[in-house]
Image 1 (cartoon, rainbow, N blue to C red):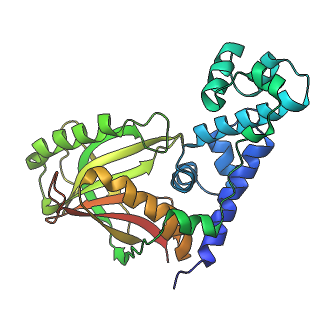
Image 2 (tube, rainbow, N blue to C red):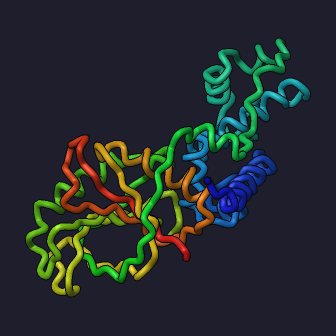
Length: 297
């Protein structure tokens, strides 16, 4: 039986963020402010929001502002340029292009038509919606305790699928290629398992930090252009991802949009781990790897 006790809390927090957006559409909205009002970290708000709604936060805000502009066009005499500016557009022309793309009609034409059926509705996240978008998924993780891991690897910064700046394909495969070519330079390496470490940057933007790394017995000499890092001991929910690594986002979406919300567990907001052992076969549908999120027990 699914446990929905934890779902209510996460859904309530995400809904708080959505309600904050709704109340402040005419003002400057940042992901940091929205996450702050929801009570969870920025990255995790964006991750859960994107998994639930299948759109980025920026896209959602834009669609809501367009919806509000419909109401203003219909019920007020506010100039179109002023409506455009309040919707976050710098010019009436850019607003008109976006409006026409969304509704196949210009703002001026809509004002004359007064069609009330174009409204884009505010997302209301509920359990029925969750069950609908995750139909027939029964993935259950292994709950494990992991002692502190000492690692050496190579680091980059990237934007994930939760951001409109998504550049995973440009950043992560080249990083792994460069790292694997030099992994033999690392002394005291523990053979057999490599890690991808994903965490939010210290300035808490939507940019993330990623490290391709291997565990070491002792944090000895660090090769040029590499970094040493430690993952503190923690409990993890460890999920198996089967198939091509290109589909890892489907697994991560399930973790954040379904399992985390249903489980009653809390993410510690430290680094997520990708774990690659001997069962990982690059480019193969027969491959297996693991994605682990740190949780409070």
